[in-house]
Amino acid sequence: MRKRSLKIAGHRTSVSIEDAFWAELKAIGRARGLSLNQLATEIDATRTGNLSSAIRVYVLGEVRRRS
Image 1: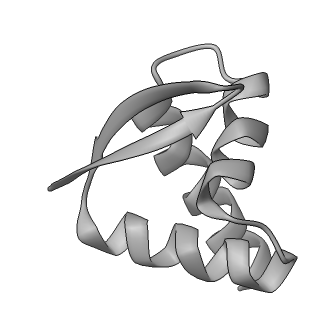
Image 2: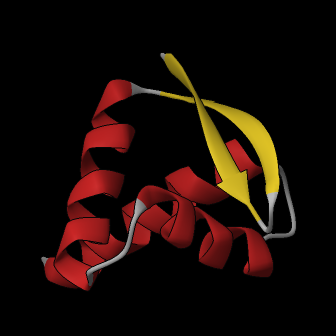
């Protein structure tokens, strides 16, 4: 589990997720030409639960789509 700060819509927030999710989130961002902050802002805009869970669900969905 790793805690990192992200800037979403001009505000700093901390997110704690497992290293594997951070690594995959970075890879998704690189593939889409987005920074972590930009990608997190997209995820944040559509979430209904907490941000950490929303990131995990997003990453899982992206991995499934590629399979």
